[in-house]
Image 1: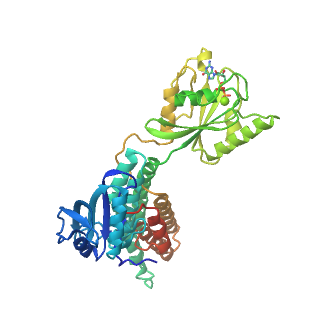
Image 2 (image 1 turned 180 degrees about the vertical axis):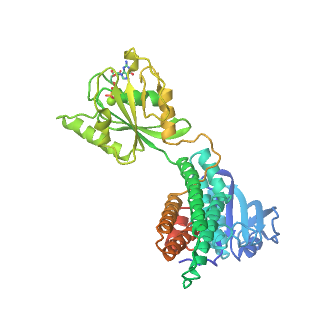
Image 3 (image 1 turned 120 degrees about the vertical axis):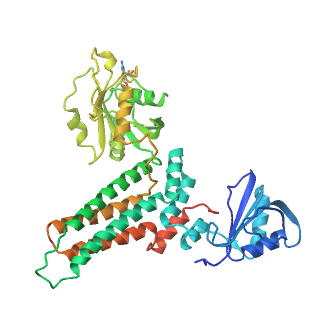
Length: 449
Ligand SMILES: Nc1nc2c(ncn2[C@@H]2O[C@H](COP(=O)(O)OP(=O)(O)O)[C@@H](O)[C@H]2O)c(=O)[nH]1
Ligand SMILES: [Mg+2]
């Protein structure tokens, strides 16, 4: 296990050519290395144009050097940053020189880990650093920034404070176990726990929304042969990714296409028509279609409006995993003289023509609503699954406490549940997180951060 007291160094900019390259050093030898490398005295927060020289006095490069005296630095320790020409060879030579002067190569995320260990940021903020760097959409980056600014942590701390209050109310009753004739009023505690649950719900909604920014939902188009599934995926992706044909059973492979629907990247999957068949190839296609349905976030179940189809819902329900949403889409309305009535947005069925595009906008609105693709980016938190799972566990413990209170099951049990939930808050923020969880979190960072 490398020591936390070593002075560490890393190239912080990505490999390849660039205008500027940054090398970052952190630890107690930083100032000494600054002096030996540049021949100048480090001055706190002063950007100086300096030479970078090797121990044998060879000029390796010239650039800007910055010194941050700890604890007012990224890691909380003395930090030096060298801005060099963005050439990998030059940077490698400088790196070797700095290692020769007493630093060791930093592990992935080690600078941020030190910032966390020195209490500059909590674990949620440390994770937000990595999420910000890794984010794949502008919305994801902006919401990771909110978490880095501490908004998510503040929300969690607020909920924790409220839970502490509830525990104190319960414990106050527990302090007088022998006074049997004292009738304790549990309603303040009850009210408090209910408020905790309300707050928790709000945080969870914001967290799930934020998570959706960096998640690509899987939408599977399924239904009988010839309903127009391949035509629909082609229409939605604006391509001819899938072969369409009046011959039933054309599609065998599942075709996946990424597309922006209402500002959200989704993966659309076209599948083989669901029917009984003796054709081995088609059978394999149908199996794959059912597999795709199993993993879907949303299924669009397509039927042909010109045909009479019975018990559409029952047909697919047996194959839909619990909780998977489904929109029933009646296609080819251009062939019927039917006027499409505008259905309530809550209604999970609609009529379209994959050929003319009629009704598609309403379909997209329904998809957007079901996946809760928020077009507003305020009030979201970039959360990880770890946070969402922990918050759900807290929710379960709070509900358990409330139930115990209502059933007058004994205040000791209620207090115990509340105590347990407080431990989870500390895990989220990294106060009691185990070493292997920390290692898992920081090893996913890039080097130099
Ligand atoms: N008129 C009309 N024809 C359609 C529509 N959607 C699909 N078709 C036709 O129906 C046939 C089957 O379509 P296809 O997309 O291959 O169906 P799949 O088997 O469900 O993939 C093709 O001849 C399509 O051109 C539609 O909305 N209107
Ligand atoms: Mg097809």
